[in-house]
Length: 626
Image (cartoon, rainbow, N blue to C red; front, side, top):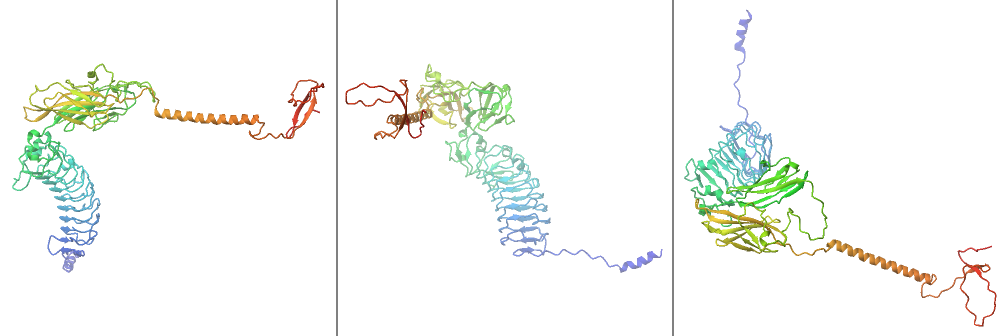
């Protein structure tokens, strides 16, 4: 109890706790101006010749301006612990790299300016931590890729996004669709070729959309466009209007842009780039009735195919129309085919079956569809044993087999009309190709004048070896046309279309009259003649044989003459070599008889005949006998 009063007496002697002292401000970086006398604190270093972010920054700053310098990279430690920073400008530097998490501590940042740098891509971690960002300016860079998750941390707060003057060919449209608070979106001066339908449907606060100077041929209608009036200029526009700028694009003025033509606007930049009839015309001066589409027409399909099981098969289907039709395939079982482990569907209309099975045979259906309608064609596939082998270097003139893609119609057909094959495009309403030779063909079709409003006819054709369509236009009173620019020995697909005025809509439309497939006569060729390589090889072998035989004959003649002259070259006197003879008496026995001596000039006289067997004994011979 005595200790407590003692403690109470000592309490007044304890030193009082001192109040917290303000932190010592960091020195202002060289060549910068710093506002540290009053809040908010600012560090201003524009045009200071900086090569990197100054390390001696006051971490309490609310504003940091580093524009117009030579900073090449933003490192993780450059902006660490700057939790109160509200505005950051890095415009017009040489920044090529931003480290992942470089802005992770800037949770209060409202505006980030990175325009005028050399960024080529923006990944998912480079903008991490910017949970309160409202203005993001990335214009005038070299951006070619924007990651799908790059804007995740600021998707709910971002109000201004500027991606103009970059190299963007694609965008993460799904990520852009989540920017619910954005009111200004700049996509101009990029390389965008398409915009998916409904890309802006959830941007309810969007007030300005700039898509000027891209590669857009069409702009799909969007629920946002139908909900808000579209204007070209913000001056005098109501707050609920959407300012849409899309000039400087190669617009294809067909029926897909009728919705945009019907809007009341005052633009002066938009022009049509295609089709050729409307190319270069002022967009708003083209009448609605001229924005027309053409339904698809199948111009080429694979003939019936037969492949052995286990081998690949390629089914081809080509179609034309405006806009360009999209081709899909349906299996014989009625299933829509796409990319899988056993099949691949290509944008050009080709379906490739990687490994065929016996159950894959049947009728495959090609469906070509666009905004004006659809067309179908059937392709038969047979899966079975392989065909019998054929000679690779046949010299006969037999016609090709049926079903060969390059098969030509025999020139000896019973009639010219029989040469038009009806296995081409699906609907044939009387179009015939007659009187055709190697380079010309006569096209005939039934009179369509009972159909009201026909303006003209259009012929479209191409060969199996060329995917480029050729167009011919004829007056409305025509019923035939002579084609004179064909190539010999080719199969052609041809369609006739009637261009008329639709009385219901008042728009120009097209209607297929019919299609046909025909083959031009092959170029004249000789039958039974051997191939050039075979003929050349035979001539070389024959010539070589003659030369060898001549040499052998010459050598044989020399040997014979050498033997006749006794081993002496012809033309020289024969000089007998010294020879010794060993003779033996044989008592009349037959044996080698030497040549008889020359007869004596005197008269014959009686003498005894003694026959001797003699053998020469010279160099290299041994004596014979005892």
